[in-house]
Length: 376
Length: 127
View (cartoon, chains in turn brown, blue):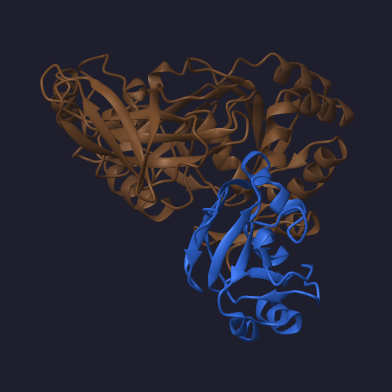
């Protein structure tokens, strides 16, 4: 038996098929992955993501320490509740984990992956030496992600029904990537689906009641299966698949998460990353690209991507995440695509599926946003 | 609960077979197999006219989560393929034993049918 979230019996009651996920018994799907996927794109779904690790960061040097620990810069977080996505790099600029950091009235809150919990905590505890910083893991909190075009209104209605009308107004006016803390609750406009919605962190003891109210309001429970197809349609990375400690964040479409300015901010991995940045500009590093396969079939992680360059040379890339897009009804993937020599560009790409080469198109990572196709 | 019709034979690799009156065999994948796979989104259909050996790979059924090889449960010639599945692979989820059939085989060694599992034995295996 694995670890169980506060919602375990709710999943069983909802007919979930449970699987081991990083040591946790988690719902992979309830009735149908595709129906769950569409529910989030068209209305609203709720995900139990309580298995993720929350770490609260307090102390007089919390901000300085995070500015050193993370490749993105928490000084960019102006208001309490503001959120930032960042990589946590090692000295070789490999990605130890990706995470979300929120500025809180009392410090910062990090949400890291469950599969990397031990190494993340070990790394943070090592890096924190010499700083006036206190790290507190929060296993007492559940996390519910409520996502979809109707999600925000449903959560506001739920708050209103509890007499929390001022809080409902505040949630309704939040900008994307910001949040608000109400007592032991924290609600933020973040998620992993490419839809509008919120993530609610709340005490374990209150989570089952809220889960029931959300379901009664027409929100569908969503398993990890649809969580993966939704994030992949949104072009979002999954740790351990699209990036890990052996991959430069620049080769994992995480360049936008690196705060190069101010140039005098030292952060872990910066020296190596500066060199990689020059190599990347010269076209010497592979790139994470989106793939579209309009022929019938499904793209899968690990498949070989044969790239033919304008100078006639041929090099192999690899799919790091692949699936069938329920929204677009064809195969989509993220793939690490090699760079060509000198000025050579990729002319065409084919994916090797059971020995057959099937043509695919390269696009920017990101296929569906707010229910609509986004690539051309 | 999965459905295991009594009038069918089954292979341990989760294919079902029905011996038709004309001596041909219709096959598909079991209700249990489609449940395990989940939403089916693509089927690489068998090749009509191909002569196959028992246990030879003839088709691939792909759900969002996984790809699963389909094997010929008996030797023979593939004489018909359910082309409707190209556009509607989800039929295998909704009607695995009827409209979701995959192909028909003309057996070259009907004795092989005796080696397949009956519904009770197969259902027991799936528990």
